[in-house]
Image (cartoon, rainbow, N blue to C red; front, side, top):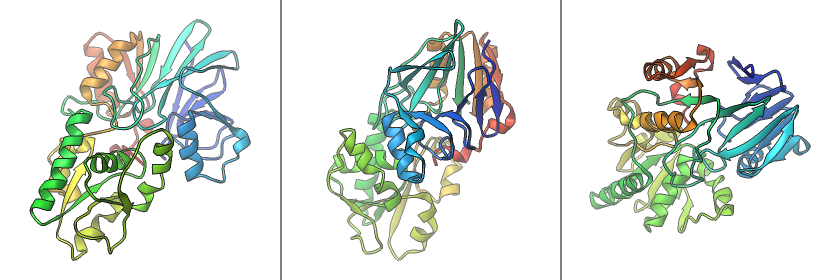
Length: 330
């Protein structure tokens, strides 16, 4: 079995000297997607899909381009005796699983993943393997999420109801991923939308991939009240202290829990996520046909225990790898 060393800053495969999503500088690193809790600069060599690499360079323009190697979905390459292949992961645009074939074993690392088709991005391709390393951010039965159609409808309905009540709709999204999905849902419905700069600066990469965001404009404090505002969560206190009559929606996997209302000052909870919910995680494990499952991030112990109850040889990674639940998107 290919040895996997789980650390607080990533996963190391010493037999082939490869790291998976290390957030500390290493010699050779696979980056599954461009969220900050998985992608940081300073590595000797980096592999990632083209969208992930473009996001990475937007965030870290100082990164040495000579160390970066773009790989397409389905592309295979050799590294230290292993054959590596990138497969779609559906989390955010460019997110990819990595299949590692070494000495007759097939090891699959999902990174962050969802099974349902996302609003924006690539639909996950299920990959069979001998050993699976899967995230479990929402690995408890209490988490059930909307699909993209229902999520889109709820976002649009919330904005229209706010306007009808004479209020400005405010929807919080992270700078990469769900922020652009919220903007897309509003723009496709013809709803005037103002977008925070941290979210707006990632829109060109989505447009490069063929998505359109008709009619949005940059957010500032002078934006007319007939616009929906798509802002980053750090703007919460600013919005609540403003003179605007606003209503806030929280669009997140954490919105599946009622306590998210108080934590986020939101009147509307929309449980749409770019992660798999509990049912999707179970299905991903089933589709993989893995003989062993290693669980990282989030509810590692609980999800591994649930899998063992279903007859699967499942193990939680060290607690240090189970990053904060609030780091769902960075």
